Amino acid sequence: MSCTIVIPTYNEAENLPKIASALFILPISNLKLLVVDDNSPDGTGEIAEKLKYEYPNNVSVIHRNGKQGIGTAYIQGFQKAISEGAKTIVQMDADFSHPPKKLLEMLEYVDIYDFVVGSRYVPGGQVDDRWPFWRKALSQFGNIYARGILGLGVKDATGGFKMWRGSTLSCMPLSRIRSNGYAFQIEMNHVATRLGFKGKEIPIYFTERQWGTSKMSLGIQLEAALRVWLLLWEYRDLKPIAK
Image (tube, rainbow, N blue to C red; front, side, top):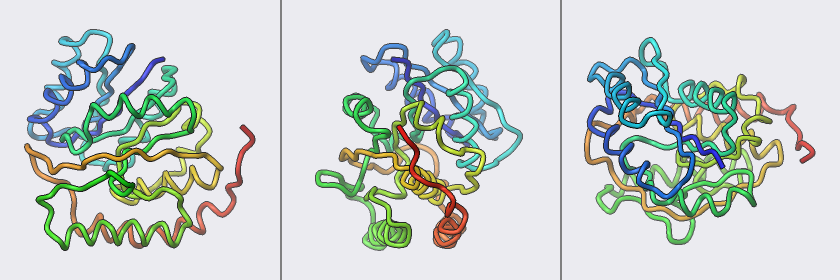
């Protein structure tokens, strides 16, 4: 089974070689890495190009003109992976917040479910012990808020560690996805739910990044809070599809 991992990058020069090494030592056959770089000033794009030579036929790179956001990066990456026939498509961060070894467990479920979520908020899941109380509370509230308004079954509605069947993403209206940041994760979950796709959550320990700086901002959080309400209207036409 071909598996393509899509990783958007912006100033991840320290993390990208490390995450690539961690991924390619996993016992996953036909594993490919697709880096979508937003013209990182720190040279992440150039490092991605070097990885293409280090891992021939397993690494590809999309270079974009400037910082366009994680949502559009994922959509572009998904579309490329689908066009290349990937049976399984993963979205994850470059900063080791998402443990690479969990991909092995996720693969056990992707043949049964339409998508699999590495979740902080199912039994056994946890966020970094170093997170202050206010950050843990904000994250939990954001998930409860989104789930309550949209009726999502996914407990980690804002989590960005997911494994999709290629056939699932192919049935989703990716060209309609408009959100970035947390809101992108919520929107993808909402669309999948509206179409009747079933997900499986497995617990992960979400660790704080060791290298580089976080991209989280107040603007991203506010976008998520507002977009949740708009999503109710924007996808009112979607109905479960026959599978």
